[in-house]
Length: 312
Image (cartoon, rainbow, N blue to C red; front, side, top):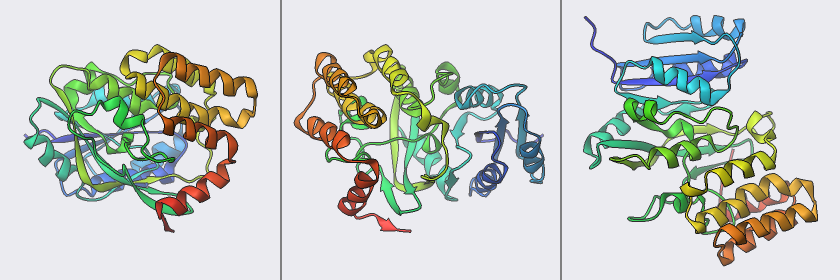
């Protein structure tokens, strides 16, 4: 009888056969060979089914969903199907470096908590430049919500976590499923909820082991999310944030979503939200003002220059 896999890799996908086969092949090329890769096709999609079936590897499993339910639901389906004690998530448009799972398993074995959530740094790759995120790792005793939201400079990426970097105990992933219907901040929502569980803790690999492909010219469903729905989620999740983190999220992430409206009433509403339910710092105010004052293209160019990003 074959030994059970050490890690189940869950890849949700739909209508992106070329991308998902690249992701799956990268997962199967890990130096940890005793794994299973579960590709969940989120709704009818014959082309993607055919592309995945063309990968001749018995460690690969394909699960088709009869109707579209969204990436969080597809991840939850994959977790329920997992046969390994560990689950690692991989978005279909991202890639792993070969040592990614080996490094994470070693860190998990050395962790001082029973339910370690193991994340890694990543290479943030855009058509314009590459950069490594997060730029720093959590400090001892630092509230996780503040690490993931509060900026030390004008640009995001100081503290950061992304779905394709996460490996977690399967028992924890089943106990805390992804929030179905949430279109943005899925990994932030899941991480903050998962790490409130008893005996859970966050462990970071210092080296970047994931390539996060941000094709800024490719349409992304998550980027089309109305800012109002993100505000509804934030208000409903207030217990997950410290007042400092609540203000920082409002004046950075929500501001970036709402600023294209150019509506003074929206500017005032988010300002009041941050002050009324959070505790903004001076940098939060400065971040908020530059987001509303500068067009996104200008902010991108300034960010690349200030952060010394390497041109692709």
